[in-house]
Length: 320
Image (cartoon, rainbow, N blue to C red; front, side):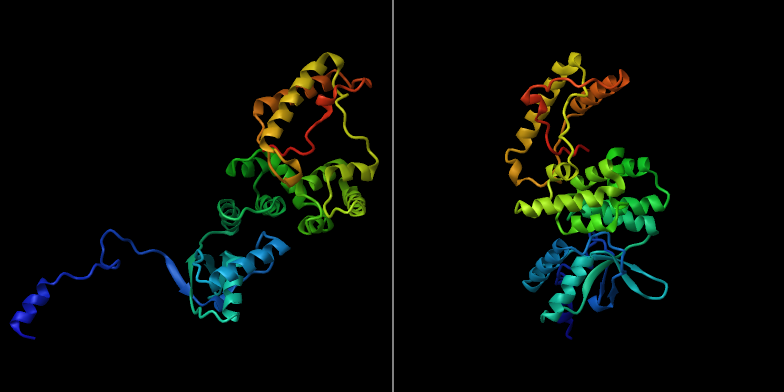
């Protein structure tokens, strides 16, 4: 190279490059072969339900059409195994896409470090920001945390939830497998099942089975709270527990509650039983206070039914 060429080369600025830009920091992404990533059986909180399979199929279709998936999070074990900790459905989609002919050799992953508790917190936390877990799946996560020594209060505080919410989902996670199957088959909503367990205990599965038969006879595929009531032959709950002196206050409270629900759920027929409705704490607190005061005075004697407006309690309100 001549002296002139060397001078021109020295004057020519280098092409900008991420690797040499001092504003850029190297990340912690790693590339691995999808076939080398393992799935630990029973680790994922998600049920292998129809919804799970549909999501895998949707991800596969997206990958085959050039979509970029977020990196998986994996654990690297001492025996050199690469185990997925977040992203099982994406991994299955990658494998399905490869089988369908996609030229995928490597995928991006991030190493996840921590103990078993960190694994559970990762699954619940990631799902809350992406594809949320069902109540049953989240209950399984709470149950694992309980097995690792976490109290109901600790779980509730960590996720900014109420203790009632955590206790309800733990109750669901502890329920018989047969009830879990009804939920996964979308025969019954999670919160309908929770109420059945609270009311009927070990007999809840029989009640739900009878309710399912009644729903099928009516040409419906899903159990409603009213089906559970009919299955036991119980009369719908009335507001007769409140003494006449309190009735006007109760009627107003439930009227306010009905208005709140109506604004948030304009078309009840199109809303799932698992849907959440935001209710002011002050209103719930007032209703709880009325009930507590009445209970302290003893059970009220049967009284004439209150007005229709007061007796139309919302069929399902999940306040958290």
